[in-house]
Image 1 (cartoon, one colour):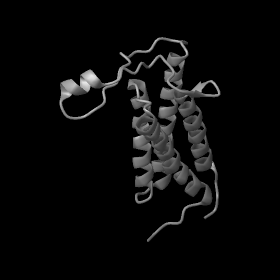
Image 2 (cartoon, helix red, strand yellow):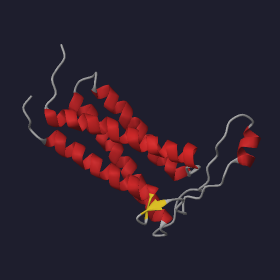
Image 3 (cartoon, one colour):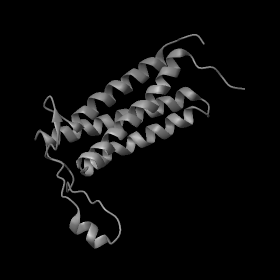
Image 4 (spheres, one colour):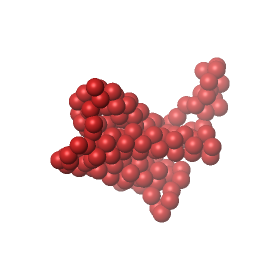
Length: 158
């Protein structure tokens, strides 16, 4: 028997699936389409989005759906907080805690290491309106997580 979701819960579920998927799609398009290779902290921001998508998908088949959606919202918020930290490192507000390099490539490990671009976490690769990609991730993820939590707190009728 399929349970019907309240409209606000359904919207929260769609946000929990759609926003991380769009942000990851943008990250991969910028990486493979425009050569903006991710630094270590960029990868840290991607992992919670992967988790959010998985949790959002689980919410489509497992009960209690609102708990799975809330967990996806929490994962999105974590990505946003990592983005805020990364943006602070990029803008020089505080020191990063990483070596700030990224390895890409496949095949021979030594060739991958030697040919990999060095991507520093403390330098902005690309920005719009003076906000870096990490800053945009913070903004989109934080607003999305807040919207998910607000929608889940609503008492809609089915």
